[in-house]
Amino acid sequence: MTKTLPKDFVMGGASAAYQVEGATKEDGKGRVLWDDYLEKQGRFSPDPAADFYHKYEEDLTLAEKYGVQVIRVSIAWSRIFPDGAGKVEPRGVAFYHKLFAACEKHHIVPYVTLHHFDTPERLHNNGDWLSQEMLDDFLAYARYCFKEFPEIKNWITINEPTSMAIQQNVSGTFPPATTGRFDLAFQAEHNQNVVHARIVNAYKDMNLGGKIGVVHALQTVYPYSDSASDKHAADLMDAFEDRLYLDGTLAGEYHKETLDLVKEILDANNQPMFKYTDEEMVELSKAAHQLDFVGVNNYFSKWMRAYNGASETVHNGTGAKGSSVNRLHGIGEEKKPDDVETTDWDWSIYPKGMHDILMRIHDEYPLVPETYVTENGIGLKESLPDNVTDNTIIDDPKRIDYLTKYFGAIADAIHDGANVKGYFMWSLQDQFSWTNGYSKRYGMFFVDFPTQKRYVKRSALWFKKLSETHVIED
Ligand code: BGP
Image (cartoon, rainbow, N blue to C red; front, top):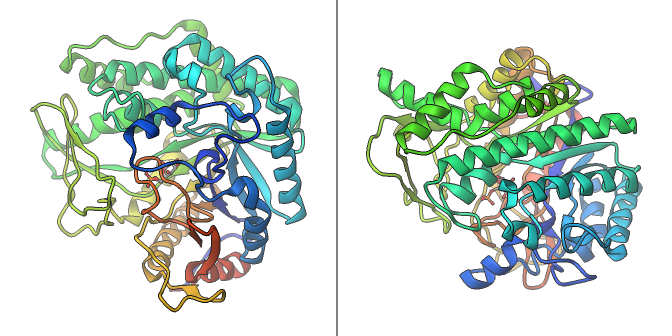
């Protein structure tokens, strides 16, 4: 049966400042946590990325032409406050005013993220999400942006608090590359919940008439088998990756069962429980009652089975299919069923997981009025054909197949009652990937990084048609 999307469903593309802008040393931009880390690692540089700092006009022209109505961009905190706080860099402020004006010119509504993995260097060195200074400076920067950019009517506080907390403190794939510190990860998760809440409450007090939300990385977690121990491993993983955030930001309280699962993980690792105060919980509850939307970033799902050995994470950051390992002491081990298809980066292709996470928000977190899919897409190895011309359209049938299935799952969830208002494809154009560099391409538009020339992919044509008709063609 042909599936359709509601008439008012908005179609968009997603990006993040550090992954598209390039120009990391231009116009007084301050350094961020990644600069030193990537220099030392020596695998790839965040420059030029997609050179969006100079090419935004071209990208927005393409976006408008191919049916993009909304766009996720983030403000690089370190372009506004190069040192994280104190002196403002007017060239950074001017850049974002120009970018937002260009969005308006192209009839594309920006949804602006305040923090997308790019903590200013000084604050990162002083503890990042674990330090009070970071939380205070982040709130001050958010207030500054709300006042400075009244043209923005859709704000996102933090992109994927979980990814930051876990990758910085447990899997070690984000700087400072600490491993095995579940206690720090949970504390960083809670701290982000609190500062998110303070920002939501401050924004609502300012009465600016816009909307504010948060974006979560949400993988649906299933047990590998029906055994009680595999089911428990799935519950533990879900508490670790999804539930503490969902509870904190969407319910405004931590459910007892969530806290029990968190404590079980920490006890198994001989680590202390994270700290939270009554005053913080009041703030969380107030914010959850006035949050306008939640963004769901969903690419893949996970299957867990019981595991009692030592923690071991092998990150597939090159596209060597089958190379990733994720075993966490006190939680369990990831193991995909044989019949589940995966990408070269071992991400499962499982549209039902999208449906199930959207329904979970609808069923378990009724306070939040609206949901957006704020990231979804597929990373592929793609290259230009030998006989490329300016008008070449890059064929990406796997992406079209992936999108068709995932849009089908979104349509099913809407049919089942989920209030999903729009979709942002990761990514608008090919971008720099934090742990994969330039080989994992997600874009609707191909970027030839050495020349920065753009080419249209076949999926952009597919996207345009969907944006115009709202009919999901098989
Ligand atoms: C999300 C991030 C994005 C983006 C995307 C794809 O977690 O919010 O910034 O990078 O994942 O991930 P990757 O680049 O690792 O393939």
